[in-house]
Amino acid sequence: MLITNTETIAGREIVESLGLVKGNSIRARHIGSDIVSGLRQLVGGEMKEYGKMLQEARSLAMDAMIEEAEKLGADAVVNVRFSTSSIMQGAAEVLVFGTAVKLGK
Image (cartoon, rainbow, N blue to C red; front, side, top):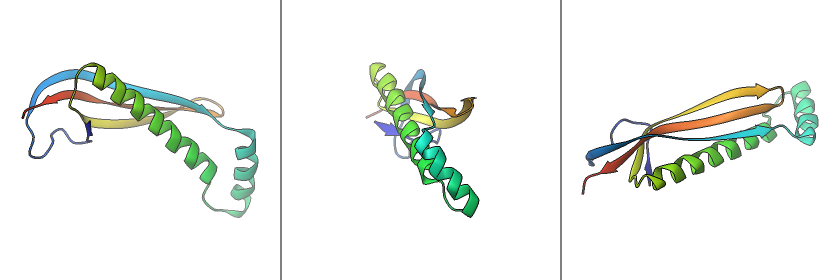
């Protein structure tokens, strides 16, 4: 499955648009991560615990989007975008969406 954030795929012709596909993941912070990140906030530095949490959420959301595209028989998903929003204090949603397409030979 080809995934791109552009509207086209170089060297390939889009022959059919199958519609919007999406995937999302909602992740909550962990108390242990909060403690470590709170200490980092005092001294400065990257909050790796939250970075890892968001990376996992993006990966799960992408997997869900790809699964939806495969069910439609897509060869690729174009114009892919990510959105992140706070659901409640301590929880965030990652949404990924794009257009499932069929490619020519």
